[in-house]
Amino acid sequence: MSGRVDSDTGPEIPEAEEEAEAEVTEEDARRARWTAAGTGALLTLAGLAAALLRLTRSATALVPAAYAGGAAVCALAAVLGSRGRTRRALWLLIAGVMVMALGDQFD
Image (cartoon, rainbow, N blue to C red; front, side, top):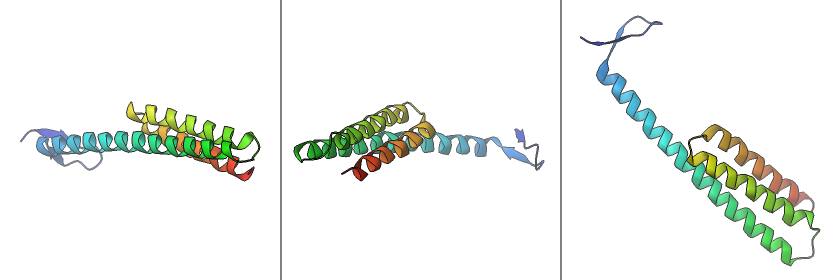
């Protein structure tokens, strides 16, 4: 029986289980990349649409600038997410939405 020995518990883990774990990990990573890229793109479009809507109204220039800045941060998160940097993308998505929300407070 070939496999590896888990140093913590001691029992031998068959190679088939190792391969199954690797396949699930690759699938989860692919799903995380698609989710980060898709969410970043969606939030980018939402931020740009809000910036354009705020430009047509009589609001301070800070409000559409905040929406556009948040959209730019979300666009960067989408790029990073598509390249596999999903943790950084998540934090950038949070930061981008927070910038947009802060800009909405000035309205």
